[in-house]
Image 1 (cartoon, rainbow, N blue to C red):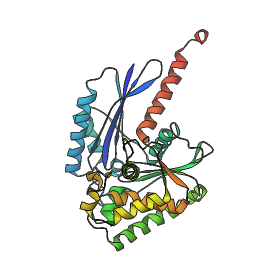
Image 2: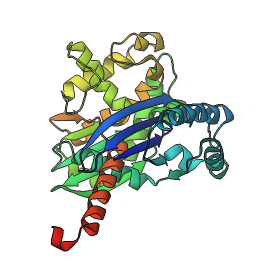
Image 3: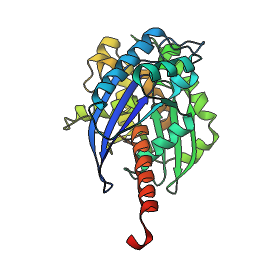
Image 4: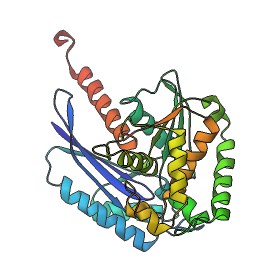
Length: 319
């Protein structure tokens, strides 16, 4: 038996999942934790991680450590994404995490992040032909899936935190600010030449902002357990209607929208713009939401490695 912990440090939040993997290959969830650390806050053009953001991140990681230190047979894989990738003080930050928390953080590329998203989605949802969109705090990963395989993937600098800081006021969204933000995102999407091959394909959305879209609509329909958005579908009309409601109110009003957490209300508009515009670009019938992404992709990769290892260690005459 093994306890496998995955830590995912993004621009807006840090999350951990712990899974118990049994000797027969079956597995079950043990614990999930998350903290909104806003690691990319005020990085600016210098791309420097700020002391307050680093302190918040270290505090969250210590809380994670208090949890997983209680477990036996522990294996940890900790990854950091776009905020740490871009940071000019990355090396010092990684050394601090290693010395104070005791775990090495692996800084993964955007394309690796996108591939883990694909693994997390494709193992648990129908994705024969689809476009996967994961919108995080500092980037969005897009994967074009054709005939049950990755055709193209990319990571682009469109996220809830950086779009908000660059273009959008955190209180009342003004028409000019929204126009400028959506124009910029449209230009970035238009430059991804292979996206046209996803025309009319279903979109699978993941990441905190996209899942918030699903939670708002599940709460509106009084569905049980609004957090369980895995496999939930929405029409384009429902997405547009909800987005219109969100941009039509100020920060305090957004905090009162059922299903939208108060801690995300200031960045939710920036976080939803990539989804809204990708829907317009591809014109799908619907969007499906996934609870699974990077962390689950890492888990599925690990499970596959364990199966391969067990197969190699099993004598031929025992097969």
